[in-house]
Image 1 (tube, rainbow, N blue to C red):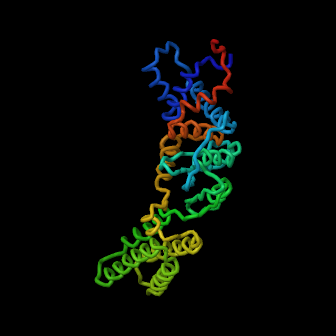
Image 2 (image 1 turned 90 degrees about the horizontal axis):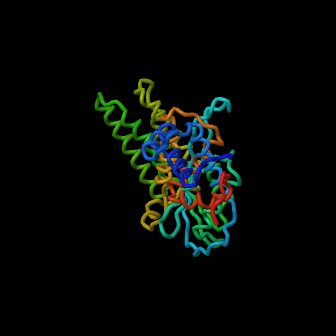
Image 3 (image 1 turned 90 degrees about the vertical axis):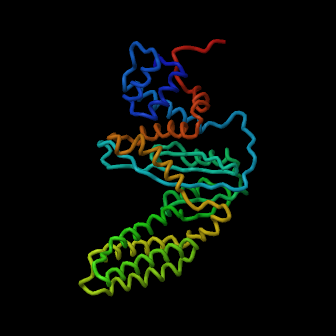
Length: 339
């Protein structure tokens, strides 16, 4: 008898184990279930991860019969990554996790997450999400990312229709904000320093405005002019000048490298087109950091994190009950259902 557990109880254990540390989840379950001999913490962990493994297996199984899905007019695919602390035996400090948020015509978002090294046919799983949202070879897909090669290549590989890559405004705006914060630290002890600080702040806002309207060339020209002014300052320049110069040079490199992906964000927003992965960032925070982040003082193996993410993703999509029923065919139970 490999698993003395009913499907309903197993689903509750998996949902609680995915939301809370296993020991706290077990204590909370004891308040609601009349458990004379509560299961061990390791039993709760194994049951939660087994549910995650079966959920992934059910995702790869072809639907019987295939459901008819109306064709979507457009799809927005936001991809971002996060890092999870690794157990010491893997000899790496952390490993990367991909998180994608897909939105169709109805505006409802579907979350997908996986550890690339442990995922079983990751591209096929993500492509299945797109197909269930009505993607066809004629459906345009807007891929939002921070410009890294990993998320961009994954989004390009799973799409079966035309794609349009857009640099996420959230990541671009955060880099501009770092420069703005450094400019605020400019000293203001003398009238000359106050004038220089005001000039820097004004230049940052003008760079932000030009990038918001897709004027990449003009923004790069302004960054170059500001860098030339900073580098031409005398040796007695404030210590903040070195920090501002380094951040502006990093912004120049980032904008120049992603120039082909920067669009007119102002026009796109007025047209109702996606421009940011801010919601994907919040999903990363919920999926990873609230349960698997450094604050929990836990280390994870890539396989354990991958299976845990499958359960948490099903909870985020509000499909755990339905998906668990579909994955029940691969469970090993000590009983047979009645006729």
